Image (cartoon, rainbow, N blue to C red; front, side):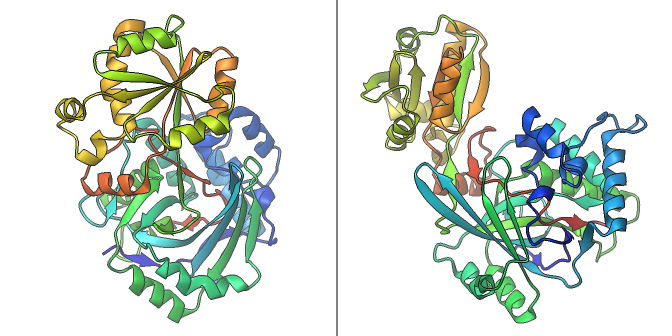
Length: 425
């Protein structure tokens, strides 16, 4: 079973509105937003994603600055550690399309274990660069500044129902995201019977990492570094990491698509792309306005799981494998759950043929078809539009101990950095 525990969070004092202190995760902060956040003197971005060299050997590097800033805020009372261990109920109100959703989760400490061999499962590949940066931030600050988003099986929302009464109180903290307008609310639950009830309800459930794979592997490295130095005791906080846990049946838990925008393919017209794939793929035009992002996303949502949308200035083509048996044979090393997904078909079956015809592409990623339309208007050559990966497929692939390509899933909204932090010393 996954081992979860309450913890004493490091949080911004004052409030309860701490919007000016919070930021999105560092990896979704663009240059303009970064500048806006840095203009706020007590924003967590100064610690989590500050200025300075990324060479930890260089004097005055960003990691050293981060540690000094965090220590200064703690000394001044800007940040304080909660008096009692707690689980933290977390609600996020957000809009997607023309609908409003609420995602209900809880912050909890989860004991670290090897991924895939126990009860915590990854689903995406990771790369070394982001892990090194996050390790240096954590090592210097001795604090886990952000969390992993984890999903646990709970189709009836049993776990969060145990915590629902506590949300009738005034929130302990609120924040509205500067970038996305998502409204965040937080309640600290210190009552022991409630904590034990949640621990019991989660005792036999696995956790699937939805977001934060790099940070999870980094936390395991951090713990190992302490062990190698002889500094890791049985009760050391580095034996745990912090998750935001969401039940699989939560109505606010949505998996969004990640579309691919393509540049450096000036000769790749819709006709030529279809021709390059004609041996194994059917190309069917869809009667949808190619400039209407909402209509494009709606059209893709109805497509087959293995189909890929090709958006050009001329319109939208749906590219579908002609023979499922051929797909199964070509992707025989993948599980059925992974081989049927459009991202597998695109990257393993379509892209090698298209790169042979048009050369190496320049890829960028967006989450709404409207953004792909804008990219084409600004000079991109085409876009591949993908139906969102169903949550059940994500869980099935993870249980098969397989990893999806990066940028397969996009769980929205992101968890704000600065709401809840986890001291490691």
